[in-house]
Length: 211
Image 1 (cartoon, helix red, strand yellow):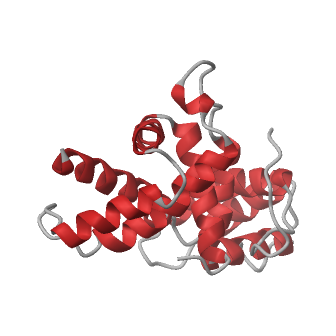
Image 2 (cartoon, helix red, strand yellow; image 1 turned 30 degrees about the vertical axis):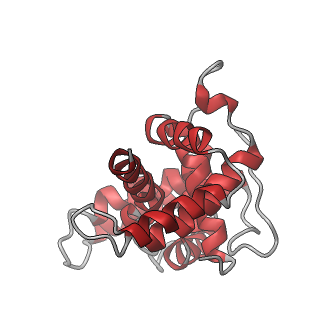
């Protein structure tokens, strides 16, 4: 019984760290160039950016990366410089604001997690993902933070009795029943919207000093 449960926990732990591992450092705009409301607590880095600004930034940085990814470390040509500048200008963001968001995105995973949440679809009505409350998701993320610390020390996906006890304690201490925790873990792995919510909560906790 313990081995399948551990495999699930390890998988879920990896999911919550995926956003940070995949985030890319955003290039700065050329110096020569002139949906859904999400919580953004004042204590969280980058909380002064609006959802609209972040979506404009995301559209611009997608175009900028399409150019910069082809440079292979070389200096951009005047045409490429102009193309990246146009991407920022046409997004509706001032270059200074674009660079501010770019810098914040490079310093904290909260920005990218928030953008991903803005773009994520809502969980399908009637699904397990849709039934997960904000409180439950917070409990799940808190448990996963503790679980990651344990699974990081597990070798060959085989937990020692002490590690298994720590994993169980992390779940039970969250306030979630084990069956409900496992149901949420499965939903997070299968539903992009719920996964984006979990990653955003995890990024917020990390930014505020939670481990």
